[in-house]
Image (cartoon, rainbow, N blue to C red; front, side, top):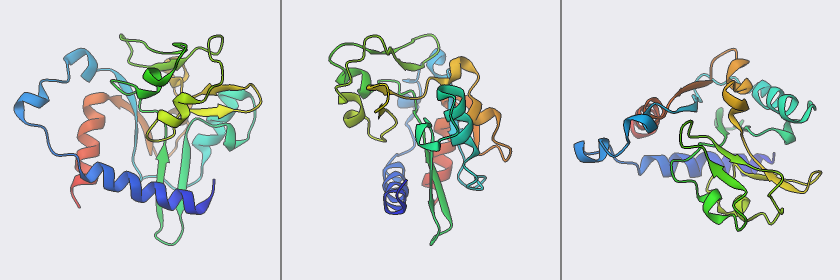
Length: 186
C-alpha cells in the first residue's frame, strides 16, 4: 500500500466517524435486536502494533499465498504520526456494494449479516469496488472478479491470529459503541 494513501485514509475515516452523533432513544431502537447481535470485526488502532499478520493470515486462508496484497483486511501505517488504521468489510446493514452490483452477485445473509460475493455470478465490472465507501471490495486481477471479506465463514482468521487483539469479533452493537467512544471522544 502507498504511504500517502494510508495517511489520507486515516484522516478520512477519522473525520467521517467524528460526524456520527450519539443516537437518540428513538434511533437506538432502530437497530433491531437480531441485527445488533450479528457478529462483525472490531478494529482497535490503539492495540495494533502494525505487524500486518492479519493481512498475511487472511491472504493465506483465502488465496493460499503469503502476499498481503491479496488480503481482505489492510493496515495503513503513518510513521510520522505513529498512527495505524485498518480497513476491512464492515458487512454493512444496507450494503452499497450489493446495490451497485448489476448482476446480484453480492448478497447479504440476513441471519448472519455477512455480505458475500458469489464468484460464479460476478462479471468483474468493478461497480462494487467503486461504490464501497471504504474500498473493502477489491478487484482480483488473477481471477478477474471482485472479492471481499467473507468473515471466513464464521471463524475470521485476522481476529483469531491477532495476538494484541487489535482485531476482534464482536456484535454490531459493540462495534457501534466502540466506534462512538473511540472516534467521538476527541
